[in-house]
Length: 73
Image (tube, rainbow, N blue to C red; front, side, top):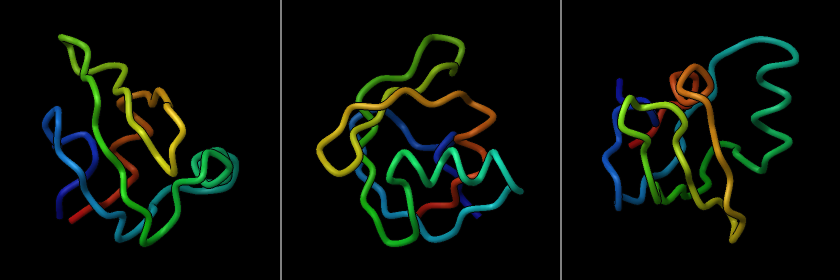
């Protein structure tokens, strides 16, 4: 299973599943990241944290821990 954390810069992927519980999952969903949405990875910091992505036309920054909860294909 591939997560958003494993995606390289410049790739576009589709969300297949969100793992995580309660407030963390809600925060990810509040950003517009839901099953079936496309995510474009714009930039990954040298140590992998944070990850900058574009979702539904919005530019967002995700922590590596949050990115691990987003399964993609």
